[in-house]
Image 1 (spheres, each protein chain N blue to C red):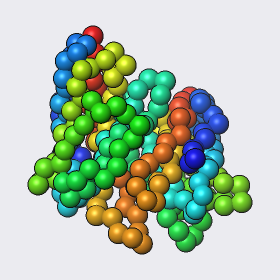
Image 2 (image 1 turned 90 degrees about the vertical axis):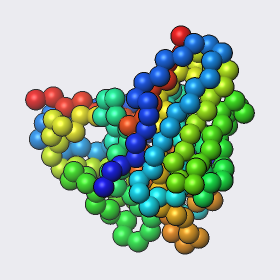
Image 3 (image 1 turned 60 degrees about the vertical axis):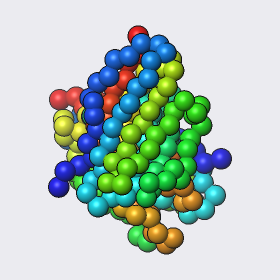
Length: 116
Length: 113
């Protein structure tokens, strides 16, 4: 069974540009999550998508946005890139949540975004 | 606010020695707890999880963790470390309402021969 796949592996941009990162969840998983792992800031929650809807977002400015497609894959878009956006962006997926259970998140290998 | 503390930034152990990585959490209700491992240049791999029930949970690669509510701890253990265990280890608490993971700052494990 294929795991969570992310593309591209590396992405180099300059300040002010826009970046698009892609994620394909594990087959059968309907929830997709995005996390940022920046040097010195640790792992921080960005966004959660489920059934095509944004369910929750972390403490990030609106220039961080995304969407989930009908096949449950997802895109993360970062507009007006700043130097501090340089980080590893990790995507995770999980099975459908229910009221009485929790589903663990399974992570991809990430996209390394470098801003010059 | 919910938080996770990993007091040890860096630990070095000898191959074959036992290992314990510490994790303390702050959470209002019964937490969902996780340990993940990250090798250089890679994503996070789930080692084990605690949702409810038996407080001693077994994971992959010979790891186990014990949930102690009275101490708000979820320490990770392994009886005999292998050189391939060298990596960074993250403890996390899962927020029930949002399924968001709140991570600790990680513990970097080095294994010496």
